[in-house]
Length: 167
Image 1 (cartoon, rainbow, N blue to C red):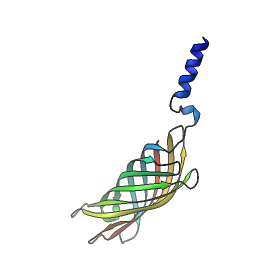
Image 2 (image 1 turned 180 degrees about the vertical axis):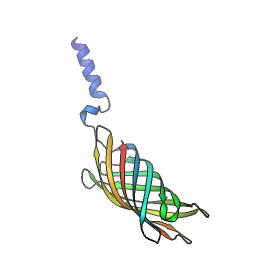
Image 3 (image 1 turned 45 degrees about the vertical axis):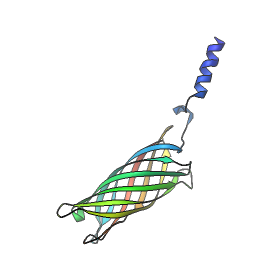
Image 4 (image 1 turned 120 degrees about the vertical axis):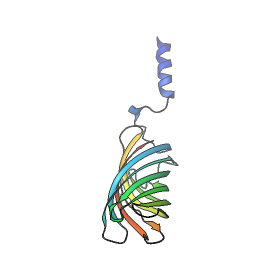
């Protein structure tokens, strides 16, 4: 009986983190989903737009994560949709607060006319907290300009986003 108890205890201590131990670690691979919206302007009066997205990446340390993402948005003012691909990083100077920066490619799909390719940037800040051993939720405020040539010029996006991530 004592041998069985020792084997069970050895197995429990040698397995990866269990949800009950509060594992909460940003290192390693992660994936996330996000939804949000905000003010979007392409040169005229700002209007409300929305965005959904997904990302995969890795935690380089407890304070630094990097990811690749894809997002889809709608811009009512321009009667257009956007599709973005970006590389970004989050730096956590505090346990739950982060600063986000990144850059990528953007595609503008107007309802009328030809699609346009451009460049985009991300700059923002937010908070993220764990809701278990490996799941975290957060909120971010970002400024995301997209730079296009031609008539569209620059599209300015001031967004609030709610996200969930699995580490």
